[in-house]
Structure formats: structure tokens, C-alpha cells
Length: 136
Image (cartoon, rainbow, N blue to C red; front, side, top):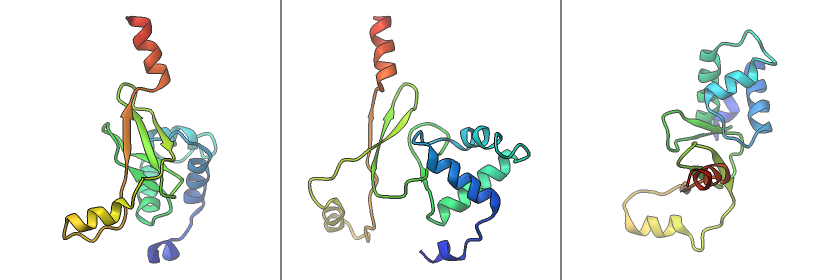
């Protein structure tokens, strides 16, 4: 990706990227801000938001538009799917390979040029399942 080569990797961006790649929780910008303040106490929330957007636009990280109001971010840019809890909003990775070439099938059905797809599974995480059983 051409933009990736032109992006200047500032100290703040490097720390944001390192911290994001350490977790598998798909944090929001607010979550990242709380994590980063431990290493960079003077970092602002605006700086975190701005740099997460820059990193995602550059293709270095993924911005996930899953259910809920806040975007989530993923340091793993490999093609993989996600699973989201409808109760608490928790997001996780799920490595499930499509049974057929879904992009080619979609290409046949539309006049769009298809590059890739995103697959999100929706359900209840184990904690929320347990809460439902405990309430019942």
C-alpha cells in the first residue's frame, strides 16, 4: 500500500501500534487512551483518536465497524473474522475459512469490483451466557 510507505512513524504512533498489537480485545479509542496513559501520561485523547485513524487509513491497523457506537481497532491486519457479543459488546477473533471463494461469488452478482469481505458473527459471550442462566 503506497500510503503505508509515506507514513512517518512518530514515537506516539509507534507506542499506539505496539500497545494495540499486544491485546486481542479490539479496544476502542477510549480504551487505548487508558492503556497508553500508563506509558505516556501526557498523551491526549484527541492524539489517540487522530493517530488511530491515521494508522487505519494507512492500512497498518484495522478499524472495525461492529455493533455499538464506538469504533474498535485491531492490530492484526490479516484477513480474519470477528465475533461480537450482543449484550456486552465484547469482540473477538474467529479464524473460520469460507467454504468457497465468497469474493468471486459476490463479483458475479454485482457490477462492483470486490476486493475483500468482512464477516462478523453475533452471539452471546460465555460471561453473558452465564448471567442469563443465573437470572433465569
